Image (cartoon, rainbow over all chains, first blue to last red; front, side):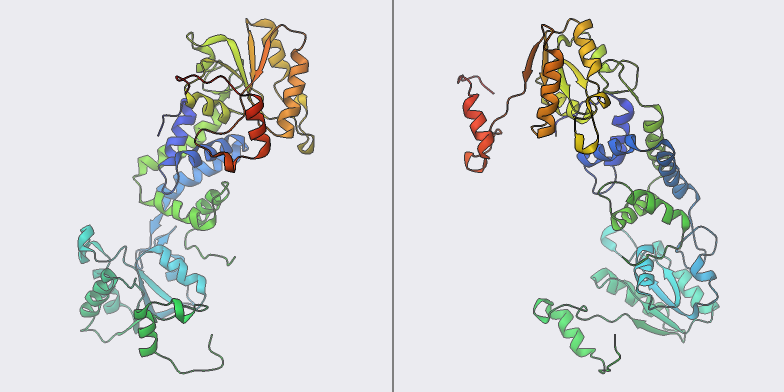
Length: 207
Length: 207
């Protein structure tokens, strides 16, 4: 790529910073920087400060390791949530995805990744010990494993399953099958096969 | 769109700020915010501060109105640039585009827009008076008009042409024609027509 000539070092710095973001090229970075130049000063100040505060003040819930502004997150602190069910997810994005369904009222446990020897991530790099401790300490009845359906996800599922085998907790995994609205034609064989094996009884109120 | 549940107000604020940028949706905004959370604190501080400094400290060159860190921009201050030629462009992005070609050694004059009655932009909203003054005050021999080939661009070209008619300055406009690498098949008729009317003599060293 040819080296763009900037007449301002401040602009060049801002473009460099923007283009360090994932999925942002130098053209987009320039567009964003020039956009900010046209905005009112207080709104640009608000943007810059929100980024700095996010990084400096954010913390992670001591209990479920979800992102939080306080020591214990809003979900764990919420008295109306079902304290007997814990859903194990890979990262905080998955917590949001599940929360957005509005179908789950239990708690979460964020592993912070999945076991992946290729990337040098072992069980001790993840919040697995703390999950086992929670199952022992809290009144948890069911652990739902909601990890990716990849080899790494399956490995992690199996590792957690073995770690919790001695406790009396029920271990489940989220249903895999044909997505709502999908046609059978386009489904892969493994998903379609699993959806037949794990078929559920038809009810008219099923959503 | 369903309302995403954030367990952190800081994260929600940062996502809102990112998604206010042009072309950034809420999914991308969340991805960018989560990316920043994983970066070292000093690099996020650097990013936030570069945005704030860009907006607070940037200024515009008093002479050519290009973006600058100083009262007179690096291009105007550069003694090796050709002071007799001024290229008139719409905005600072156009300056960068022309600088990137490395084919131009003269100065610039940034109008800050083009005459557009539909958007309520008249000649007095643009740096046209200051261009006329520069032509009178400086030793300018040629003014190159490098505006968009739109009705607004043509109107602005004509307005500037009339304003400078009384001075002895030579007025030119950048060549329009078939882009390098383009096939004639795909060129529009007006461009192709103009490229025939304004044909140039063939030389083997032409680039």
